[in-house]
Length: 147
Image (cartoon, rainbow, N blue to C red; front, side, top):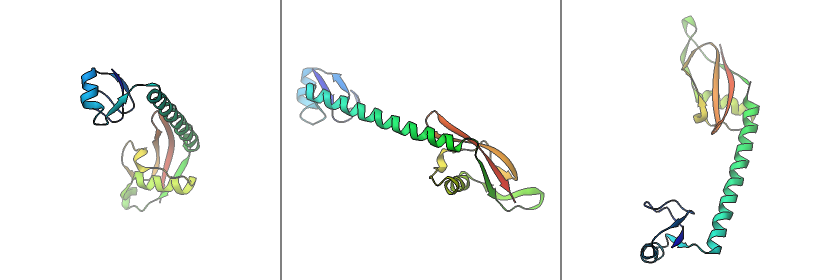
């Protein structure tokens, strides 16, 4: 019997997937517990509509991410920091500091967890930084640490 899952079922699959299961398993376990419904035209149309909506939302998010990456590419972010002798900073410049500076500069919030630092920034100078805006969409910018 073909069923459309309404919830994730460990041994079968994920929500909104269609699967072929034995008649007894469907009638005695899946259907009474509300884990699945029989795969009729209505259920299949619901699955197709949800898949189309998810695809549309993913395309919108990707377009927004590409737009943000275009804004971020090539940017130079200047940060002021205090240092001791030899130009060594007190502490280090973190992804949080960079995210705050970018948010202030662009007016759009940037998540600090998406900023990838190759190494700790503990001295004055310019450092290349990569930001993972979206899966497979990255932006490269320069962080300039000044006194």
